[in-house]
Length: 169
Image (cartoon, rainbow, N blue to C red; front, top):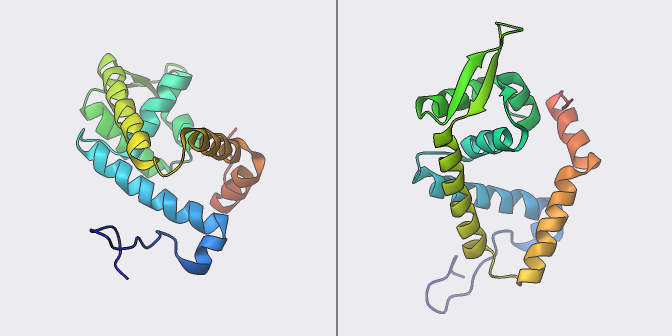
């Protein structure tokens, strides 16, 4: 059986056989696939998903310390520093020493960062439209609702933070 779609060939599911019987296996593989597709699209802007995450949280929550961003997004310190460095080099964020603690930095989005986030969100909207037509618009809304519920619920959060050995305050 051919993989993918070429002509009349059947499509082999991304998660075949008994693995597809488990929602966790489906989430894991589909998450990998979507992540890779998002990375490929954002590469056209010279960005990665982690850059979008940081810019997004700063726009949602306002200025934050570099450490707080990492904790909130569950990004390790080394990756957080590299991500902020990337964004700062592109003038998408500004990093300043905290006045009350000179050992840490406060990060804010610049006007250029606000423009880029708008471009990123256009890419994300396009990806939603391109990648989800196998389900109806009502199913897309339901999927989004269920994923948001899992993301915001205590079960996965506690399990993940337990494995990582940290928690968000």
